[in-house]
Length: 475
Ligand SMILES: Cc1cc2nc3c(=O)[nH]c(=O)nc-3n(C[C@H](O)[C@H](O)[C@H](O)COP(=O)(O)OP(=O)(O)OC[C@H]3O[C@@H](n4cnc5c(N)ncnc54)[C@H](O)[C@@H]3O)c2cc1C
Image (cartoon, rainbow, N blue to C red; front, side, top):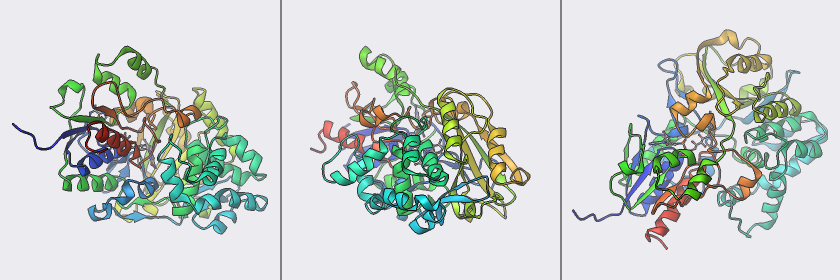
């Protein structure tokens, strides 16, 4: 049989797998995606986890990076059902005194929730970069390559991003409220906040939050991947679900294969086809902290004391910098904090399509040591109750996921790590795995590869570009 098109295979239908598949299909290849799960999407699935009619995001909720991604934002995803919901505030961080600091698209609104003494410094830190947020995002999505097109912007971003979160927060701000916002953003890295580079992703998240809010897809994160899959299908791509690729040998004939998996998974799949030096490198690849996640159905909204929390989808729960830093430090010392730093989302406050009747869906997670099997439900609920007395009384249903549950649900969450590997300053500058592998025309494209974790698809897009050059479809 004569094949008239080059055949590409993508293993894994996370946002990076789908991005790779679309880029390959756009270049004219015949693409087939194999997905282990019955439902596509990896870290972007939405399921009725507890009760029919209540749609929970199993992993990601905030898809700001889809909107700003140099690749995804150019795709016609609206035509495939993607609609955005942008809450009034991107984020709220409540305090024990019943107030909260917020991150809003309106800088004055944000500043009004900080200590007066910090208003100018906060504004000067954020505003110049907020004004260039899309350009900044485009540059960062090329990491570790740095262009010299915007030296001032990049040095402005870089000198803060490469700092450690605690030192930066304490040196810039006198008041506790701005310091808390900085700490909460830095904590998304999963690093101890005393580590250099721990503010890098948090800084970008803060800037883009001010620029665009933190939008999420109406109806759940599944809508993003469904739109990507719809577009891929229109380009002629196929997706086969419920098919686990255990070995590269089991794949049908192909010209190129892209793997939306992390290094240890690749090691298993490649069996003994890898040179020992490369295999050892993969064996030594480090995974970061895990997550323990709770989903709830509530009879009403979370009863926050601070009124600002009703205006934000994401709420950072951990009070001031000292407590947030202590929690993340403990996790990085392989301990379980008594008072974990909790990241909560409450999308049904703004998106009624996910719930039936008056109920609400809420999720929250905290970091735990990689592979932890401790049930953190009690500690997470105690933290929420602290800022929202009466929260527990509203719980109608609960679903929890330990690190093992997360990995069983999605094998890319090794030991519960959903960032594709431990984050570090070194990894920001010198990524430990690249797209190309020693096996001919076989590429990695998951969030373990550059530029970074998150739902932007740029790992997949960049891996696909490299693959297309290797097989000489593009120059
Ligand atoms: C609780 C939680 C909250 C998060 N919140 C956010 C957020 O708000 N915003 C954000 O941007 N990011 C968030 N993330 C991170 C985000 O989900 C990931 O960065 C992103 O999904 C990574 O995409 P990926 O394509 O690299 O891998 P994944 O999304 O993990 O997809 C990998 C896919 O490959 C499949 N697969 C693996 N092995 C095989 C195999 N052998 N055969 C076939 N298929 C296989 C898996 O089943 C999976 O579908 C969150 C993650 C979690 C867990």
